[in-house]
Length: 294
Ligand SMILES: NC(=O)c1ccc[n+]([C@@H]2O[C@H](COP(=O)([O-])OP(=O)(O)OC[C@H]3O[C@@H](n4cnc5c(N)ncnc54)[C@H](O)[C@@H]3O)[C@@H](O)[C@H]2O)c1
Image 1 (cartoon, protein in one colour):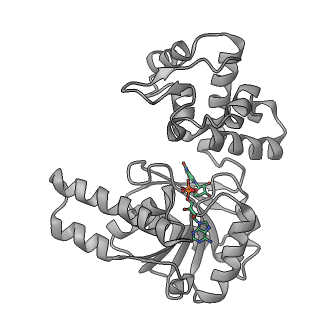
Image 2 (cartoon, helix red, strand yellow; image 1 turned 135 degrees about the horizontal axis):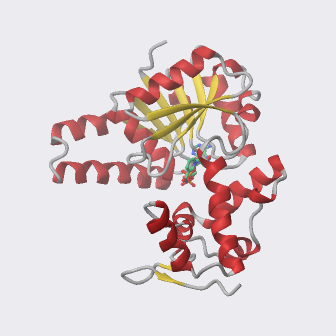
């Protein structure tokens, strides 16, 4: 089946990016939100990105306008009816996602495919709640969607080879680097990255170095573009903690357990870049390391 129209549920951090890159690849896009305010905010981000690309001479005005015109924002999921692929990028809450699929499954044409962008929930739990588990797969994008090249294409126990092929073809058309992986918590990237980030925090707790020393060591010694504590701040400490908790529940291994410092910082509302404070304070011109007071 050839995809012509893509539905995106959720126009937050990930959803607006998925809608944008899909429209840039030439797909017609329908994107939904819960409130007009959130929808306007997400669409505003797409328009800003397109305007910036025009200003920088990377995109012609007419092309930017054509991309924007391919994105149809709406508060009504029934507009997904004719979509060939519907991707959910709503809040990381299984009950909310199941409610969405129950509604969407009844609306969307029977031969359409469904995908979840979940970072940590098992794909099968959502697939099994629809009437088309063989047409349901995981499509895991990375933040920011417009810039990060990877797309993990995830096969749950019910996902058909046809659905995997469709996911790979969709990713290729977006210009993404696609990798096939299985429905195991964390998939490939988080399976490797999350224990590493948690170890960076544990290292800080154990006094192997200061915040800056740990970050600088991994930049200068391992060639990483940013150190583990800076990267944790970018991922969001709340997000990191919730992914770690899901992985720990699944595997019961210490390497996936959220260290006490992470739990305390999340409790304090220190979520990293998005809240202005994490391992660094982002209120000034340059981030300043703040010892979490272990
Ligand atoms: N943030 C990341 O780095 C990242 C990376 C990969 C995957 N993900 C996954 O992507 C999904 C979304 O994450 P996010 O960071 O964009 O969250 P977000 O909070 O920025 O956006 C989620 C949006 O979904 C909306 N929403 C909730 N229920 C809805 C519904 N029924 N219909 C339409 N919209 C609805 C919310 O109003 C919110 O604006 C999650 O499953 C998350 O695990 C996140």
